[in-house]
Amino acid sequence: MKGKHLLKVSDNRIVYEMTIRRNITIIRGDSATGKTTLLEMMDACLRYGDESGIRMECDVPVAVYLTDNRKEDWKSQLQEYEGSIVFIEELNSFVKTKEFAKYVSGSRSYYVLITRWSLKNLPYSVDEIYKLTEKGKYPGTRKIYNSAEHYYSSHRMTPKSQTDKVVTEDADAGYEFYTALSKDKGLVCETAAGNSNVIACMRNNADQNVLYIADGAAFGTFMDDCMLYMDFYTKGKCILWLPESFEYMILKSGILEMPDISGMLEKTYDYADSEKFVTWEKFYTDLLIQRTRNTVKEYSKRKLSDYYKGHHTVQLIMQMMPSEVQNIFR
Image (cartoon, rainbow, N blue to C red; front, side, top):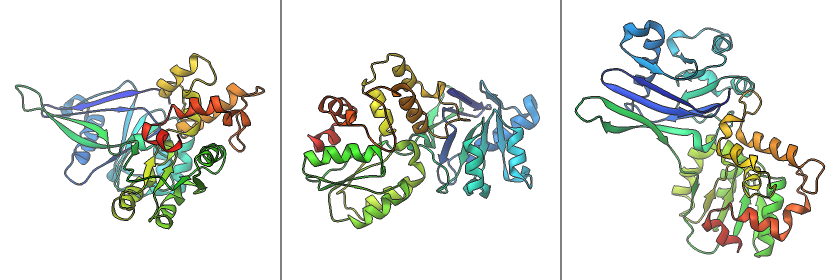
């Protein structure tokens, strides 16, 4: 599936509205925030149609997988929904399995998971974690309007003093780039060697002022633990910066001088097929490799070409960083 899809669910009292644009969307929130009501309204509309008194509007098919209509083989049920936006209730524990993660990686559907769990096997974006919020009432009526808002911000900047160290989750091309930048400023740069190791690095460097860099496109599942640790243990010393991906920054910088790329970055949802790319980071990497093959700018995920370490190129990429991060490397 591709595209950005607006979903609106309403009756004579409540309206829910949200936009789904990636293969995995997470809706969080405590009890009594409207998650169950949303699912029950959608399920009733799908079962009973107009007789339910509920209207559901979307430009693609929508399905709901509740705990009371599960089959013994969840995969068979999801296969019937292929090509749809599928909402899955949080009590379905299969969403935590590696088998489900593997299924999603090749699916033609988008999945909206209503859950308070941290789904360690799923690579989902920090930007696609939402909470349901009440936006107020329509004037002159009793209808309550609810929408989905971001649960986290894309980066957290709380620098207290000069940075001592840079830690990247990337161990390959991105790490090489930030190592070169750090060396010029006399900073130590280390790799966490994976998203799952960032918390351990925070624990080991709790007394230092550290900039942590990870690809936001696949860091969503680690955000709860990461934010908790930052709030209670690092005492505001660290900075967490989550760009979409290192490859996104290269493409966004204009280094390739190809005008069609800007459109792909602005509306990635229209180009990144969920059946082929489990995360947008995978799409950006594939795009960068394809567009630079057999040129002086040839990109490799494993080994960063010297071209990307040149002064002019580095300056262009740095312009894609927030000012707080740029200041660390200047």
